[in-house]
Length: 606
Image 1 (cartoon, rainbow, N blue to C red):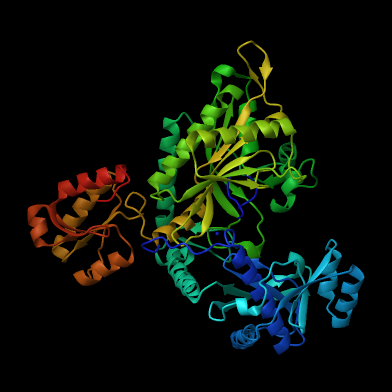
Image 2: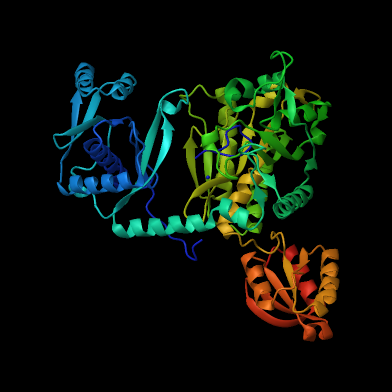
C-alpha cells in the first residue's frame, strides 16, 4: 500500500466486523484468482479474435487482464465473456505448466502474432514457463495456478468493470483495456463481498462529502486540489486544535515554513535526486537558482534547528507544523481526498541525543495511540516495521546508521508488546519507519500514523549540538505524523463513521428546532449562549413543519437536536433527541449546555 506520512511517497461499517479471506493470507485464493484471469483471457480471445493479451495478475479481491482491442468492451460484452468463462470452467480443462527455451517461446509467440508477449519475454529470466488451459490456449506465466478448471467455482466469480491502462504504465504508449473481475472460494464469500461493495458505495467519502457539504473540487482550480467549505473547515480546525493542545502538553513548539524553497535544499536532503518526478516543476532559469513547491517539511525544520548552535540542554527539540505540501500525482492516481496533489501534514521533527532516542520514540507512539483513541478507531491497528531492502539502491547512508535506527524501532515495539509485522522495502529512503496500519469497517487497510528514525539527514545537513563534555555531536531526528495528512484522514473518517461524526468532531453539534416563529427568539438566545461556551449550535430558521425539521437534521447527521415548543420556552428547557441515544425528553437548557460541554471535552456522547 502506498504510504502517507512524512516520507515523500503518498502511500485509499457494518455493525459487526466481517473478515473475508485476504490474498496475503490464502495461497489457494492466489491460485484461484490467477487461474480465473487466464480463463477470462481465453474467453475474450475466443469471442474477440482480434484482442491481444498483455498481463493478467491476481490482485486483492480479484484479478484483471489488459487487452489491446480495437473496439471498447461494453457491459453486454462482459456478460458474454462471463458466460464463455463458465463454459470453459465446466469443461474441467487441465492447467498445465510447460518449460521451454527462449528460442522456442519466441517461435510460438511469432506464430500467434502477439508483439506484447515478445516484449514481456525480453524481460523474463530463464527458465521460461508457459501455462496452458487445455490444448487451445496458453500464455507466458510463472504461476501459481489450480490443477484444473474444475477447481474453480462458476458461482463464485463476477466481472466488474472495464478501465483504461497504458502499456507498461507509460502514457506515451498504447492505451489498453483492463477488465477487472472478482473471485472467491465460495458463492457465500462472493455475496458478502458484493454486500460490502454496496456498503462502500454508501459510505464513499466523495458522495457523503458532497451531501454533507464538507468539500468540493473545481475543474477551474484543478484536479487533486480540494476546496474546504465552512463545515469541512470546522472538522479540519477541530482536528488541528486537538492535536496542537496535545503537542503543547508534550513539549512541542509550533513553527511555520514557506511553501517554496530553492532546489539546492532538496538536493542536500536527497529528495531532488530520489523523487524529482514527484515534485512540481521547477520555477527559474536553472537548478542553481530555481525554486520548487515543497513536497515535505523536514528540510525546512532542519534549517530552523541550524539557525543557532544548540546545546545538549536544549534537546530534545520538538518542532511541529501543520504544513501544506504538494506532490505531482498523475491524474489517474487521484481519488477524492485519499490521493491529492496538495495536502496538509501534521508534521513534527524531534532533534534528540542518541541517549534520548528510545524514550522520545515511545512518547511519540503514546501520542499516536491517544489520537486513535480520541478518534474512536478502537484497536483495529497493527504496526508495520518498515525497514529497508538491503538489495535495493534506493536508500542513503551507512549500514551502521540503518542498523541503529532499525534497532530503536524494534526495541520500542518489544517494549510495548505491539501487534506488529515487518515490511521489508517500505522504509523512507533516509530511515526506517514504524507505520500504523488501520483496518476499517469494510476490512480495507490504510496507513495512518507514522514515526521515523533518521540518522542520515542530520549527517547530510551537518547538524550539531554541544555535548556535556564540550564536544560537537550529531543529533538524531525523529519524523512523526499521527494523522498522516488531514485530507486523507478526513476521507477515511467520513467512510469509517459513514458521515456520522462523533459529537466533538461534528461541524454542527446541536441544532435547535423551533416549532413556530414564536419560539424562534428563545431558540436563538439559547444557541448564542451555547456558542459562547464553544458549542457549535445552529437554529433552523426555515419555518418548515417540525417533521421536516427533524428529517433534515437526520439527513444532515446532526448529533443532537433540540425541539423548542411553547412548553420548553416556558420552562426554559429543550426537548432533546440524539443520534446516539434517541429521544431523551425535556431537559433544562442549562443542564443540556453543561452536558454538551462535558461530552465534547471528553470526546464522548451526550
